[in-house]
Image (cartoon, rainbow, N blue to C red; front, side, top):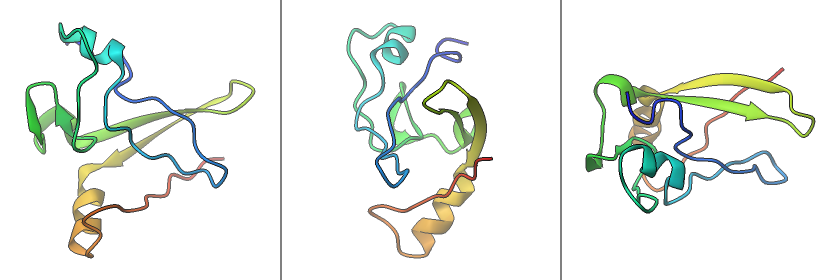
Length: 102
Protein backbone atom coordinates (compact mmCIF):
# COMPACT_ATOMS: atom_id res chain seq x y z
CA UNK A 1 0.00 0.00 0.00
CA UNK A 2 1.39 3.40 -0.98
CA UNK A 3 2.59 5.52 1.91
CA UNK A 4 2.18 2.78 4.51
CA UNK A 5 5.81 2.98 5.60
CA UNK A 6 6.19 6.77 5.32
CA UNK A 7 5.53 9.14 8.23
CA UNK A 8 2.40 11.23 7.74
CA UNK A 9 3.50 13.75 10.38
CA UNK A 10 6.77 14.42 12.15
CA UNK A 11 7.74 16.88 14.83
CA UNK A 12 9.21 17.53 18.23
CA UNK A 13 7.35 17.84 21.49
CA UNK A 14 7.49 21.08 23.43
CA UNK A 15 9.09 21.44 26.86
CA UNK A 16 5.97 19.88 28.45
CA UNK A 17 6.07 16.86 26.13
CA UNK A 18 3.18 18.05 23.97
CA UNK A 19 2.97 17.49 20.24
CA UNK A 20 0.55 19.50 18.13
CA UNK A 21 -0.43 17.87 14.86
CA UNK A 22 0.72 20.02 11.94
CA UNK A 23 -1.74 21.42 9.40
CA UNK A 24 0.18 19.64 6.63
CA UNK A 25 1.54 16.16 6.07
CA UNK A 26 5.18 15.48 5.37
CA UNK A 27 6.29 15.93 1.79
CA UNK A 28 7.40 12.27 1.68
CA UNK A 29 3.89 11.13 2.61
CA UNK A 30 2.32 13.25 -0.14
CA UNK A 31 4.88 12.05 -2.68
CA UNK A 32 4.07 8.42 -1.82
CA UNK A 33 0.61 9.18 -3.20
CA UNK A 34 1.90 10.96 -6.30
CA UNK A 35 1.51 14.50 -4.99
CA UNK A 36 4.16 17.18 -5.38
CA UNK A 37 3.47 19.16 -2.19
CA UNK A 38 2.47 18.37 1.40
CA UNK A 39 -1.27 17.84 1.88
CA UNK A 40 -3.32 20.27 3.94
CA UNK A 41 -5.20 18.33 6.61
CA UNK A 42 -8.02 19.20 8.98
CA UNK A 43 -7.21 16.41 11.45
CA UNK A 44 -4.89 13.39 11.73
CA UNK A 45 -7.49 11.07 10.13
CA UNK A 46 -7.82 13.09 6.92
CA UNK A 47 -6.73 11.05 3.92
CA UNK A 48 -5.08 11.80 0.62
CA UNK A 49 -8.41 10.99 -1.03
CA UNK A 50 -10.70 13.26 1.01
CA UNK A 51 -10.58 16.29 3.30
CA UNK A 52 -13.05 14.50 5.56
CA UNK A 53 -11.80 12.20 8.32
CA UNK A 54 -11.59 8.55 7.33
CA UNK A 55 -13.27 6.79 10.24
CA UNK A 56 -13.35 3.34 8.67
CA UNK A 57 -10.69 0.82 7.81
CA UNK A 58 -6.95 1.42 8.03
CA UNK A 59 -7.10 5.04 9.20
CA UNK A 60 -8.95 4.26 12.44
CA UNK A 61 -5.70 4.00 14.43
CA UNK A 62 -2.71 6.28 14.67
CA UNK A 63 0.67 4.64 15.20
CA UNK A 64 3.27 6.77 16.96
CA UNK A 65 6.99 6.13 16.79
CA UNK A 66 8.56 8.14 19.59
CA UNK A 67 12.31 8.67 19.63
CA UNK A 68 14.21 10.26 22.50
CA UNK A 69 17.36 12.35 22.31
CA UNK A 70 19.68 9.33 22.25
CA UNK A 71 17.75 7.37 19.63
CA UNK A 72 15.77 4.97 21.83
CA UNK A 73 12.36 4.27 20.31
CA UNK A 74 8.91 3.39 21.61
CA UNK A 75 5.75 2.63 19.64
CA UNK A 76 2.20 3.45 20.76
CA UNK A 77 -1.27 3.40 19.21
CA UNK A 78 -4.08 5.93 19.57
CA UNK A 79 -7.52 4.75 18.45
CA UNK A 80 -10.06 6.96 16.71
CA UNK A 81 -12.58 6.22 19.48
CA UNK A 82 -10.48 8.29 21.89
CA UNK A 83 -10.93 11.32 19.62
CA UNK A 84 -14.71 10.77 19.54
CA UNK A 85 -14.87 10.60 23.33
CA UNK A 86 -13.03 13.90 23.70
CA UNK A 87 -15.33 15.51 21.14
CA UNK A 88 -18.37 14.24 23.08
CA UNK A 89 -16.90 15.77 26.24
CA UNK A 90 -16.96 19.15 24.52
CA UNK A 91 -13.34 19.35 23.38
CA UNK A 92 -14.27 20.18 19.79
CA UNK A 93 -11.37 22.53 18.99
CA UNK A 94 -8.55 20.70 20.70
CA UNK A 95 -7.92 17.93 23.20
CA UNK A 96 -5.05 16.36 25.08
CA UNK A 97 -4.20 12.66 24.79
CA UNK A 98 -1.67 11.04 27.03
CA UNK A 99 0.72 8.47 25.59
CA UNK A 100 2.55 6.71 28.42
CA UNK A 101 6.20 5.83 27.91
CA UNK A 102 8.62 3.76 29.97
